[in-house]
Image (cartoon, rainbow, N blue to C red; front, side):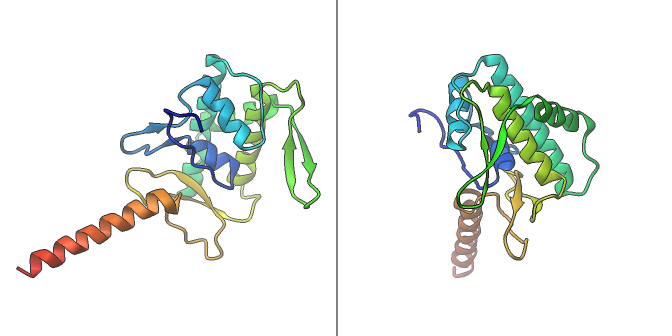
Length: 191
């Protein structure tokens, strides 16, 4: 990780991990891709290496991120998908050029060509969002129970009852707050 930037929150689902590059949406928002180079770094973490990113391309990426977040949030609460968000996701998916390849371990992986542009990587993210939001994949979209986060995440747990986008951040923070409140209540009643 590059010093001076907040850590990435890396998950196993590309599209919802991408929306997590803006966290604490309902509190003091944390932008995890504040510069074009930081987006290049994030993409490399997911095997979507591109050589460069301009400020205009970063704006396209953020527009896609917010569109995925809006559509995933609507899907999680079973509302109609917002048409502008659907349009952005579809446009980015159609504009990308990447190939799905099968790994020796039997998993699908995206391959960008050496001449790939940032738009090609965004196309992969958009295609992943389509597969998640459309219900094509086994799991369910949910919203983080943290009142300051409310991130959309893809729950693949056996019971489909996960409450937090990330147990190490939002989950632990909420458990700690409940524990401290419980201690305050006990110490207040002991007096």
